[in-house]
Amino acid sequence: MQLPEVKTKIPEKLYSVLEKQGITTLRPCQEKAITAGVLEGKNLLVCSPTGSGKTQVAEYAALTSILTGKGKAIYIVPLKALAMEKYKEFTSRYSHLCKIAMSSGDLDSADNYLAGYDLIIMTAEKCDSLLRHHAPWIQGVVTMIVDEIHLLHDPQRGPVLEILITLLRETRPSLQIIGLSATIGNPEELANWLSAELVQDSWRPIPLKKGIYFDGKVEFY
Image (cartoon, rainbow, N blue to C red):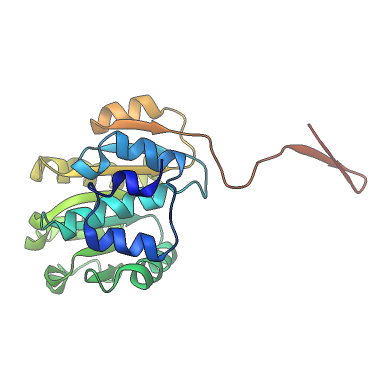
């Protein structure tokens, strides 16, 4: 799918950024996500390999919600280091379109200053803390992105992630949830739990080859 084909669905300011980045063609998982309604507020579970463009699916959804005046977006990541990485990436691309913040520190604060930001990146633990502190600005969140959502099965991080998704869905019935994962064993079951459309694709920018290394040589098969 060519980018101009979805020009009417993407906010003008965001479309201009994509053009300046030299994007002319959507990757397979992006095309499937747009067809499934990600820009219209539909819940999605996107399962595709690393580097396939699934993070951009989440970016398009978040920026569309913000630029059309619907509300804030939060981006949940498992690690503080990843939160910083995403903050730098998003700031370099979109700081002129919206106010971006990262919150991953004090778990005993409601971080009321975040009320003035549009796209907020945080860890699951921080988001859980904000919910427990009844941060009033949470009511302005319309899009929630969960990166590495397969960690729902992790014995340490899984329970916190499951609770915050459940609480946000209860307090924000119209919340758009976008789950991202490169690998997940039960995508249909998880998509059903999220009331989400399942987007799966195997395309990757660099082919993945399997082989056996022995005695200084690699034999691919």
